[in-house]
Image 1 (cartoon, rainbow, N blue to C red):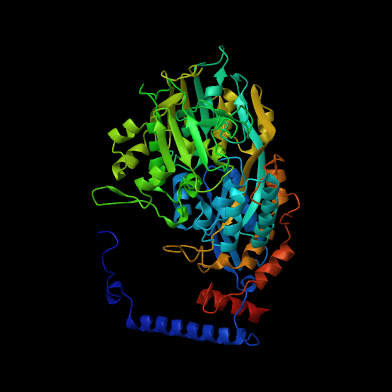
Image 2 (image 1 turned 30 degrees about the vertical axis):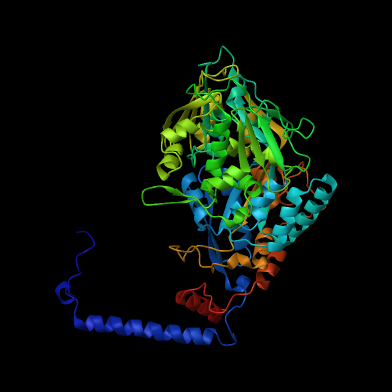
Length: 621
């Protein structure tokens, strides 16, 4: 078997004992010389470098393959950091396929990760809870805990007085700037590219551009009833609204499932009833005076795509199963935090060997939180006032699934959740068609839809990893729309028959997350040799913050279609404070911070050969 046979003895290969002895002596001589060089080279150097600037380090950072903007962002932070101490600081930029990228993110294997955040709902709490609250989706991934900030975030989320609430967010924003937990690199404008035969497009900052119910094609277009979209790459994390928390799956969810309330056209704040018959308010009796009870009357005549009627039982079941699963990497925190007392004390459900669910959040707890008043009415009982609750219900996680369909396919068991990760049954204008992993998703029109049927009969979402291939398909009219990086803005503008939609501010922000609790299991020390708590030192984080060239990223990579944010809360959203400063690109300041970051005793980021090489250089100099 290859690689298993022992090497033949030296004598049989014609090598004499004398030669072997000479080699051994030579090795010993080299070792002796090396030791002498180390001693001489270190004369006058009383001790090893005690800071990360002089000591240097290796670090691997990641981006999701096919995303050239994040690739460029990684290259920019690499350039900035390596210039602080050339030859001693080494940054490796590595692409990962989307599903692998998500897995690395979840398991803490990423030292630093570039990601984007599209809003779940239009409220500052949607940005603070995931990123800064201990136990939040991203805070837990990077090991960040701050009990003082936890208290401030929780208090602001439940404050009903808008003036008081705005002042609270101003103070929190200042604290976040001082902590430097994330590098907020860009707040983008809308950027969508389509052929000119596409009709009905509008931009809403709260959900994906790909809301196919609004779209149609002119009769003269090729295949006027079929919409073809060329995405970059990446598979959905899950088709289950209780689990999926990323954009690929989200684009499918918003077209197949529906929520109780939805956004009115292009407005990011004005809600209209969807599966509910009206939006509850204090004035119409749907919201209690203390802001803790929300009652929804359901729209009549709504069916799932299999023709079965939707009732309040489906609504309650949809929220119960998400709360009981309690996936820490999923979206249900936005409901659990105000529906379940002491929500963050509960972990994710486990399963017996037979696959039976054992939830920490029990059915009884869900029954106290959500009442099915009758077949057409459901009531949510909050643990505290939460002004953002209605907006949160408009997010994909609030999608209503068919209880009968889920129960017929495993229900709340391991098998049931596994089944729903690849199947869908919603009330939306489309239903899931054929799927080919790493290749395409197909959506077909739902002929049982309760509103006017969609103009499009079919949607084909193809994965086309190469940017040039997507550009060519778009120019040739082989697709109706495509994901095109902003760096290609000039190329798109020169294409005949292609329309670029841009200029409308979004609430999407890009960031670099710095992991304070690294999982280095199985990592390659040649790529990453920092300690697990490397980013727990604020000086290290500040060095990274000032080593990133924000101007180049925004003006060149993003082609001027974005701005540099001053924190998590985007400009234009309630709670934004323009007085909070931004991090400046300043390599000298980055050096000062990295020099102030002390190396713990016993930490080694260099090999013997590194030390030997450095000593030789010192002697040569």
